[in-house]
Length: 128
Image (cartoon, rainbow, N blue to C red; front, side, top):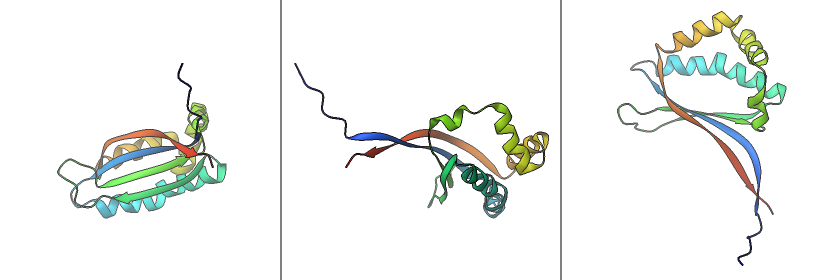
């Protein structure tokens, strides 16, 4: 009978990764949004303790139809995603002034970028 190998890792934080293609001539406009509103949301979530870190990456020489920006947000655990709708709406209302304004801002962002996909992944941390 085969023995199981000892587990050499633990479950770590969770990463949410978004692949963004900015529209022609809109890279700087989109980065301005990220540096203001998106960044303030991430900082508020860090202060709350839900977000551990976040990153913005620029893709070098993307092909047509591919992302040129990658957004990475590191959450402390999966439980963060299980909060109530009211809690999520409160975060958006604080950032945008109200939930309807948040919804309108989401529509407005479509004029500068296209969401090309994303993923949620659990980081595995090796035991020492």
